[in-house]
Structure formats: C-alpha cells, structure tokens
Image 1 (tube, rainbow, N blue to C red):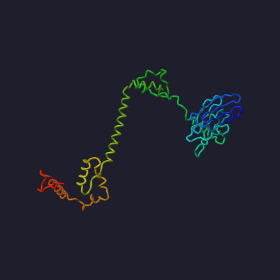
Image 2 (cartoon, one colour):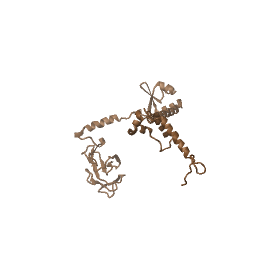
Image 3 (cartoon, rainbow, N blue to C red):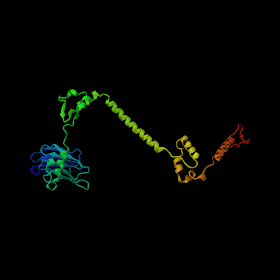
Image 4 (cartoon, rainbow, N blue to C red):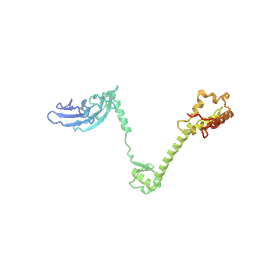
Length: 301
C-alpha cells in the first residue's frame, strides 16, 4: 500500500493475486485496476512525483504505469526475482534489490534526469540515441545507371520511381525485386543450384576426411602375410566377430611379433600344419555302417 505524495486522498493497494487498485477516498469505487499477468503477490508500490508514474512490483516484474490514466508505460523484467524497488528522488534512476549479489540499477531518461553524482549517464544515453538513428532509406535499394540498364528500367529515370542520390538513384525495394525477377527469371534457380553444389562439396570433403581417418596402417616389418590374413578374416567375418587389426599391431604384448625377426613365422611349416589338419578332418569323417575312414568302428554314444 502507498499514498500519493502530492494528494493525500489518493492511494494504491496491492493484492495477493497480482492486482493493484488505485483509490480516491472520496469515492467507494477504485479509479482503475492494474493487473500483473504473472498473478504473483504485489511486493511494493511506489509513486514517482515528477513523471507522474506509478511503479508496481511482484517477484518477477516491475511495471511502470501512467498515474492519471492507468495505461502501461513500460516493463522491467530482471533475470532474478525482485524483492523491492526504490526511486532516486525525482530522477530517472531506479534501484531494484534482486535475489543476486548485485542490485539491479535502471535509468529511464523519460522519467527524469540523471542524478548529479552520476551525470555520465546523460552522455551514455546521448551516444545511444545517436547510434540508434534509423536510416531514411532502409526500404530503398541504391542502383546506378548500369544497374538500370541490366534491369531494362532506364525509362524510369526522371520519374517518381527513382530518387536521385550521388552517382545513382534510390528505388523502392519491392519495385527492385519485381524488376529483378522479370529481367532474370532463372536467377533463383541458379541460386538454388549453387547452394546445392556447395552442400554436396562439403559432404564430399567430410567423406574424404573420414576415409583418411579410418584408413589403417597395417604395414609391419615381420609377419606381413599373417597381418594380411587377419585383415581378410576381419572383413569377411560377421558383425561382432571382427578382429581389430590395428589394435593388435599396436598392442605392447604382441609388438615384438611384428618387429623382431626372431618371431618370424615359417610359412612353409604353417602351410604343412594346415594340410595335416585338413587331412585329419577328412579322416574323421564317418563312412556308412558306423566305420571311420581309417577302418575303425565308431563307438555308439
């Protein structure tokens, strides 16, 4: 609850449901009702005498209203929860204690000048006003005489469609886009093709990079044939049964097997062992009548 500083008969009252009622004691009905859409309890109400503004606060937002009409003037919505609000006398400086280590400080030049002890705020606002000036020709396109020839619009020179400026003319952006579409109707198609080609070239570069990364260096000093056999087995094997050849070669436990000559395998001996193992498999094959290939009788299980 807060009383109007210049008129003691007027006051404003905040409710738990985010509404502010402004009363005149001479009337039983509120002058106007202000609503906070977050519907949080009103924490603080302050009057700003110089600008005739009313500040109302809940935990999420600070609203500034026109005191006479009750129209919304502006909002301040900090990132942290708001506990209160204070104005610096009749200046446009506002302090808001937040649920953070630092106090929220806001300056609204329309509500008043900056205090004397921080007059540099006026210079900051002037610089911002200068930098935020809007360009009068935002909706216009600057074209030269050669551009008009390309657009086949040289006949527009001297008409209200073109405004002379420096070495060219200003044309409305919509008119320029229509002329561009009519003079070169396939420009958009070319643009689409260029974009598609750029995306495809990027994908090709990524594929090449991944191939280079996935390439395995399988050249070793000793037992190269054994490594080649492992690679062939891993490529032909099913999922889950592949051998990581690169990890096997770089493993410290088997490092000497691929670098030291003493661990070189005798390929002839390996071939002979394979032949013997194949013959043994053939000999174990059963013949009709329960006999084996070596004329021995199989024992029934």
